[in-house]
Amino acid sequence: MPTSFFLPLSQPKTKQFQNMYTTFQFIHSYWAYLVLFIVLIATLNALAGLLGNKEYQPKDFRISLFALIVSHIQLLLGLVLYVISPLGLKSISSNGMATVMKDSMLRLYAVEHITVMILAVVLITIGYSKHKKKLVSKPKFKTLSIFYTLALILMLSRIPWQQWFA
Image 1 (cartoon, rainbow, N blue to C red):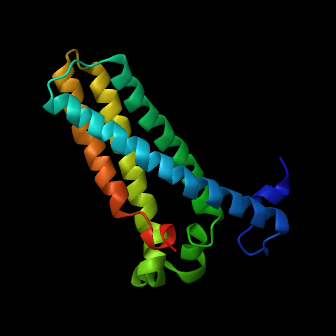
Image 2: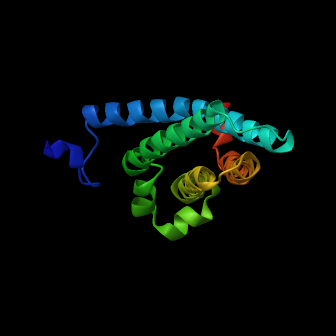
């Protein structure tokens, strides 16, 4: 493995490293639209199934599975970005945790965003896993509704909206 991939934090960024950061930032930012859309669809589908007393169908399984998959991909992209971004782990190491926690923008990127998004993906994962163990439709939809709704609310609470509409 090339040693340039594991640059120490003190070394200046190379053009290759900057390109990698820009690429991950671009993919993570635009994949977020897909994640939000699919998790919203999966949540609304689960709520509609629960409130409409519908039978659980293969399409319901596929929708919830797709929400699980896209959210996990986003998490992996985000974790890489957290390590290579100046707003993530490097912000904490260069500014110190006390400074990061006092600045709302630094705190959002370095602490709140990653923590809440990990929690949201965990909720989606738990909801998906628990719903598979249920044998009838209503408990399946109820489990998905609870966990996916909580995950969606958490996601919406810590999206850096100022960057989405800048």
